[in-house]
Length: 67
Image (cartoon, rainbow, N blue to C red; front, side, top):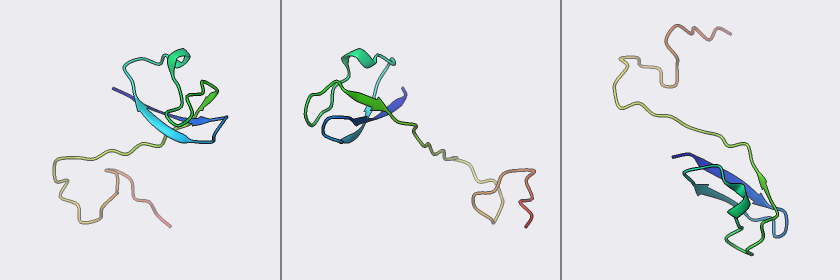
């Protein structure tokens, strides 16, 4: 289920909603109740439950990252 992030154009509250569908017409600000919202570009993170065997965290297989 995706998480959508919004900012309220009325009270400037920033909030995130866990929603099944992208149905913005019924989305309201939890602080002031306004429907005058702007959808934000969300960042994301991922994690792995397995050990890659690499001692350098955050690297990608096949990427040398040179400098």
